[in-house]
Amino acid sequence: MPRLLRTRVLVPCSVALFVLSGCFGSTPPTHFYLVPPLTSGDTASPASAGQRDLTLAVGPVTVPPYLDRPQIVTRTSRAKLGL
Image (cartoon, rainbow, N blue to C red; front, side, top):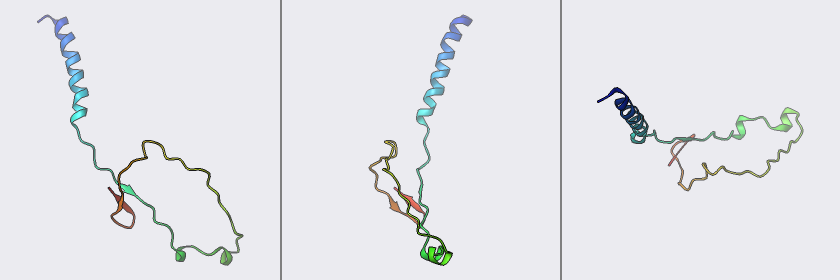
């Protein structure tokens, strides 16, 4: 086989095999974690700390389409969620 023909055949075949090898791999399972809220004993009350009342407002929240998934999530431990 001439060298030029061999290069024209082997290079595209090698690239195709490299690209296709990614299709047969597996991805690790997804893990979701949750930061638990502080309990009332974990924080000092504003009155005892000498602070004023503070109001915090959050505007409309939107979820990106790649996060808007229909799966049911269950709690597997205090700080971990699972599918």
